[in-house]
Structures are given as C-alpha cells and as structure tokens.
Image (cartoon, rainbow, N blue to C red; front, side, top):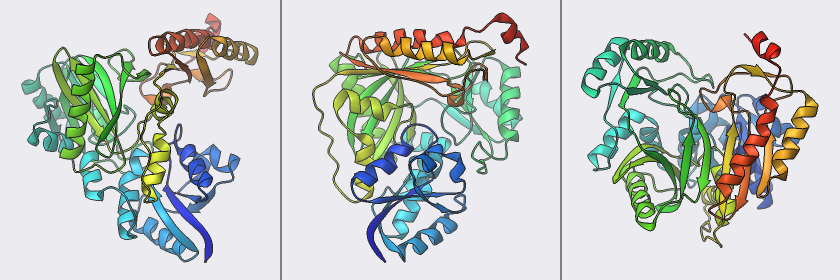
Length: 419
C-alpha cells in the first residue's frame, strides 16, 4: 500500500468545476482518481495526467467494488462528485467506507423533484404548486387545476434539460409526450418515468449558495427568452437591499434543513416577486455556471476547495475578504448560423478581453461550427467574466459579451445553408 492518500471523484461535470476538484486535491498532496465509465468524455483527464479507474458508474455496487480495490493499494481519504448525476452515488460510497459526506437518502430525496416539493411544502417552505403526471393525459389533466401557462420538466435532471414553459394544451401534450418517451438521459442513465407539471412563478430569479447551514452569497440570475429557461448570466453579489438578501438567505437555509442536507454545498434557486418568495429547486451540490469561480473572485471564498476539504473530513474556511463584484455572461446564438472564421474569432476574443474589468473570455466551439439557439446549457457557446466594483461588473460582462458576439456575424448565405 502506498503512502499517498486518494480522493475518489465519481464522474465529473463536463464544464466548470470538475477539473478544479482534482487540482485542489493535488495541491493538498492528495492523489485524485476519477472513477468513470468513459474517460474520453473529459479532455482535462489527458491534459492533466489524471489517474482514472474505469467503472460502470451507473451501478453503485460496481463503484463500491472499485473503491474497495483501490483501498487495497492506498488509503482512501474521501469520496465526492462534482456532477449532479453522481452525487448520490458518491455519498453512498462514502457512507459505506465510513468517510465524510451527505446523507445518501437525503440526497436521493432532494434529486426527486416531486418528492423535494412535498418535503419542502410539509416544512412550510413556499414552493410552486406541482403535480407528478405519469403520462400525457395526466399532464393535460394537471393543467386544469394549475392553469396555463405551466412549466414541464423531468422528475430528475440538471442544467434546464427538458424544462419548458407551455402556454396551452397542445404544447403541454407535445412536450409531455417528448419527456415521457425518454428512456435515458444525456449521460445514458435510466430516467425516472413521468413528468412534473408545475405552476409558472413570475419574478426575478436568484440563487443562494449554501455550505452546511451557512448561506454564503446571493446570486442574481439572468435567463434567456421563454419558453426555455437557459441561464445566460449571473451577478454576484446580487444587487439587493439587506432585507431582501436576508429573506432569501433564510429561506434557502430553511430549505436545506427541511431536506435533511446541511453537509457541504447546496445550490438553492428561488424567485422573488415583490414580497413573495418561492423556492424553485434545491440542488445538493455546488452550483454550475461558473458560480463557484465568481464567488472566489468576489468574496475570496473557494467553494470548490471547501467541498474537497469537507470530503476529506477537514473544516473548510468560509470567511469572506473585501467584497468585489463579479459577473458572467454566456454567449448563445439567436438564430441558426455558422461561427466566424479563425481570424474573426481571434479578434472577437481580443476585443472582449480588452473591456475594462473583463478577466476571462472563452469560446467553447471551433470556428466554422454550426450553431442553433440554446434550449439548455449545452447550447451555450462561450462566456465572459468581469470582476470590478459591485455596480459595474455586470455592465462590463455585458460589454464583453457584445464584443464576443462578433463571432456570430456570419454571411447570410452561410446562415441560410444551415439545416
């Protein structure tokens, strides 16, 4: 048995924090091991020379068997995941091995959106009215009580996948048919049958990033055009008065406690319309959308590091430094088209990076690649991050995104050629 301790990472998210989990562990002298069914899914594995353990991660028993094999070679110091789809598996493996982690049953209950709604409502936490329908007919019947428009979504999922606002019966039936016909999700994991039909709640959307039972920060969200709910940007901290911020934080912490979480990170999404607050969703994981990076930039609090520390049984530091403003804006296509050539792309990235306050501008797609309007996070084409004072960060990120959007200015003939 080697003297180097291991941190097992059960799969990873494909963008954002997954790579950071592994790097943070290495900086602590812990060897990260990515337990995965497909290492090729993650380009950073090769780039960072990350050790992998090939495993059927759809099977908790298979992951546990792999963990026990690895434990014969080196001490396992922790087990965690940066992916929504595998946090419950990681929690269960940690529990089997006697290591720190959230309650696996609480995580599973939280990930079942219908059950989550019932638990929150029973605890007096305000949530949208919703009905779990098993088929198209049930979804249509549910709208008779809820009234249109309604939001349809899978009972489990992440990244706004399959979430859609339906204005009438025909749209409801069509989207319900699409959702109920799905057998597996985009990761190839079997999906829970049914469709969640939910009251549409108006208002401004926020998230509260909670760690343990501490509300770390309130984030202002910007969504794309309906009927989809694609997140196009975040401002941090949110521009709220102290009363509004406190009410959102209190509601988020109540939600976490009601669901039996309270270990590590939770990402709580809420809407506020005047005095009314509704909890839209609680996710038993770190936020996506680069929010942990924004939190680090604005407050000096490293949520990725805190999650790794917690998984290793260490007490993380959540003390904020001087407050700055941080904002991100994602680039999406408004119509089908083709990304510009390499020269235009280079110029657009340079122009975005020259905007005062912009600290990062990134494109996820290659020049000449065909693009379509985003229906979920997978349709985002790039991002711009700005860090400055709290009142200017969003404006700088907007300006940087506008500069980056030059990559979408392709000749009309090319746009018309896109099918």
